[in-house]
Image (tube, rainbow, N blue to C red):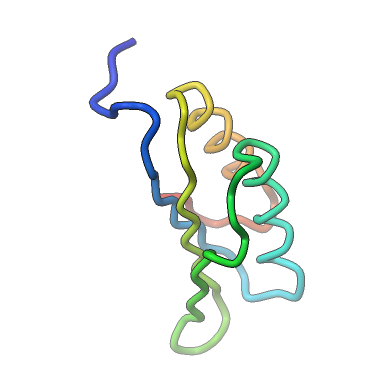
Length: 85
């Protein structure tokens, strides 16, 4: 499979889910499983206007397409996650 990305590269992921206690920590744990060098302090959090949803932006140092695919699969399978971009 060919990819337009050159590895390693910084790759931002936007993860959206319900604004529940523990959502950000749960997502950070998933990201760290696939990108152990991810700095959780760099995670950007933004609540929706009504405060019902939370958008997280995690920029990981991607080393391969397989790593990104596995991370994306685990994030989209997480019950708290609504959208991954």
